[in-house]
Every structure is written in structure tokens, then in C-alpha cells.
Amino acid sequence: EVQLVESGGGLVKPGGSLRLSCAASGFTFSSYSMNWVRQAPGKGLEWVSSISSSSSYIYYADSVKGRFTISRDNAKNSLYLQMNSLRAEDTAVYYCARERGITGTSAFDIWGQGTMVTVSS
Amino acid sequence: SYVLTQPPSVSVAPGQTARITCGGNNIGSKSVHWYQQKPGQAPVLVVYDDSDRPSGIPERFSGSNSGNTATLTISRVEAGDEADYYCQVWDSSSDHPDVVFGGGTKLTVL
Image (tube, rainbow over all chains, first blue to last red; front, side, top):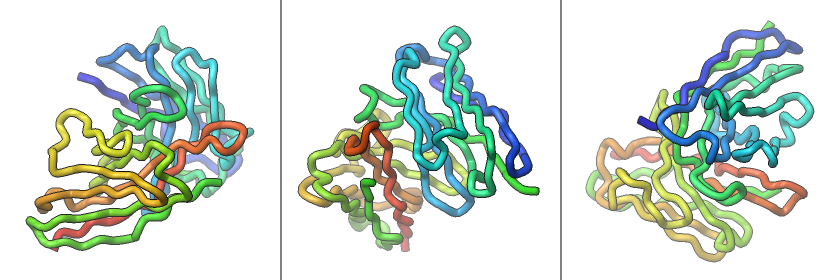
């Protein structure tokens, strides 16, 4: 079964750090670009970051640029998001999502169940 | 930055046809993808590349895209179709690609 499972969410104070992980199974992880998408409570979807299959191309939303770092380990079938200098407005459910095709045009065809990040003092 | 505009809500009776629009400047030149999200669940891709359906998505879901408006059409609406729907494109107008989501449309089945 094709599956993505996120972990690492939790409660963190403003200015703190957190590292999210996404474990992939059921498909050849190293062949796909991957993304992080977040959703604040009661709000819509917001794209966070994208990484190509070999990590050659990495993109960030302006709202997280300079604070978040996306990475992947194809040997471990895992995607990561290092989040530093966290703010209250980063509070959201964070989803990892697989791109179905060529980076820069494709839909996200597989999503994880999400992990909640709460930034509060 | 590129903006996608969706109506906040659409209501339709069971068995009727629901049309959810997604407006954007010359959106017809982009590939539009649509997601369904039910409460407490992750989004599910229902239409990609304007009008293609992933395996397992009913034929009742279809899409079109032209000019400044893309449309998700749900025929013979069922109670189980009640959900939030989001359109999405990639925008390459800046120095790097960005993913843009519409604000979402809540579909209510009366």
C-alpha cells in the first residue's frame, strides 16, 4: 500500500525549533518530488516547501524562507522539515505530499495523515 | 504573486450538478488540480491536469479550464460529496516555482 506517515509534531514555544519527518512506503520514494503543505486550524491549504527526487531543486514559500529547511534521505525513504524560529502563525497541521509527475506542474497524488504543530507560550 | 479565487460555499440538492469555480489570471494556460477534503481528513486528489481523474475517483467528477476560470463539476451529487474543495496550480512567474491553492469552497448537500 502506498503510504506517507508524518511524525514529530507537538507543542513548542515561540522562537523554538521542531523537526518533522515523513516516512514513505509502497512506492519508489527516490523517483518522486515531495512537498510539505500546512493547514492552520479552520483555514485553507498553504504550500510550504518542495524538494526534487535527488534534492537538486528546493523551493520554499516566502512565509517560511530562511526559517525552514526541507531535506530527504532516499536510502531511508524519508522526508524531513526542520523548522526554526517558530512563530504563532506557524501553528497548523503539516502534511507531506507526493508529486505525481514533473516538478513544477504536477498534482499531489498521495498525502499523509498530517502532524499537528502548535506554537504557543 | 498569483491568486486563485474560489466561492466560499456552494449548495446543491442530492442528484443535481454542482459546479465549483476557480478564477485566476489566464488560468487556462496552467494545469489545474482539484482536491477534496472532508473534516478531520487529509486532502484527496480528485482531478488533475484540468480534467483527468485519478484511479478510484468516480466519473461524476470532471474538470474544465479555459480563459480565466477553471471549473470542477460534480454530477449526480451524493451526500458523501459534502466536503471542502481546493483548486491548485504551480506559478512560475517569480524566480522560482510556487504552489498556489485557492481559498477553498465548502460544498453543502442540501
